[in-house]
Amino acid sequence: MLKSIIKFSITNKLVIGLLTFGLVLWGFYSLNQLPVDAVPDITNNQVQVITTSPNLAAVEVERLITFPIEIAMATIPEIEEIRSFSRFGLSVVTIVFKEKTDIYWARQQVNERLTEAQSQIPPSAGKPSMAPLSTGLGEIYQYVITTEDGFEDQYNDRDLRTIQDWIIRRQLLGTPGVADVSSFGGHLKQYEIAISPERLNAMDISISDIFSALEANNENTGGAYIEKGDNALFIRSEGLVSSLEDIRNIVVKNNQVEALF
Image 1 (cartoon, helix red, strand yellow):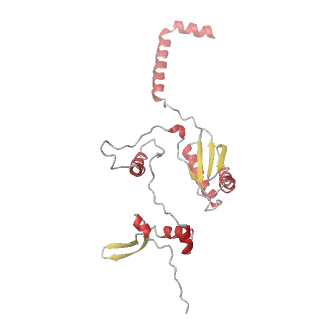
Image 2 (image 1 turned 135 degrees about the vertical axis):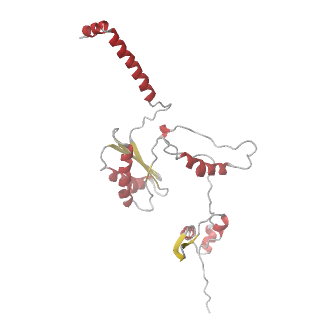
Image 3 (image 1 turned 120 degrees about the vertical axis):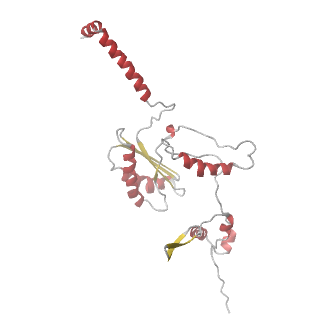
C-alpha cells in the first residue's frame, strides 16, 4: 500500500503539487477562521444559579435554598452533573450540560425551573438568579476611570463609581460579545440611617416600623385619568426619595398620648 502511494506520487507530480498547494491554502483559511484568545475560556458548558441570604447559616442555606434548587434542576435533559456549595449567606448551584447543548437553550430550561424552585424557598431566605453568561476566564478587558489633570477636586471616588455604574457600564452592555460588566473599586453611593436604640425604645418604635415607613414612603403610586377634550390627563403621586431632606421628613409613627381625667 505504501509503495503504491509513493509510486503514484512520483509519477503524478503535478497532481500532488496541486493537492499540496490546495492544502496550504486551506490551512491559511482555517487559521484566519480560528478564534484565538490570550486566555482561552476552557470552562465547560454550565449555568450557575446564585442566591444570597445574609441571615442564614450554611446548614440553613443548604436545607432551604440549595436542596430545592437541585431537586428542581434534576429533571432537565442533557445534564452531565450538578455541583453546589453552601456557605454563610451564599448558595451557588452549578448545572453542567453536555458540550453539544446550546447554552441559550440550557439557560432557558434553568430559568423555567427557577420558578418552581422559588415557590419552595421561603420569601425571607432569598431570591435565586442566574449568573451572567461568562466566567472568570472570559474576561477580555480591564479599564480604570480617572480624572484629567486639574479636575481632581471636581470628581471624587464616589462620583467616578456613579459614572461607571450609570453611564459607562450601561453603554458597554450593548456592545456585541459583552456578556456582563463588573464594577469594583471606588465608593458606592448610598444612604444609611443610623439608629439610636435608646431613643427608639423611649418612643415605643421598633426597627420593623422604620423599615415599613421607609418602604411605604419611597414609591410612586398611579391613579386614574381625566379626559379633557382630545387629551387624557393621568393622575399619579410621586413619592420616591431623592435627597436626605426627604428621608428626614418621613413620619415613622404617630404616638398619641391619652390624658386621664
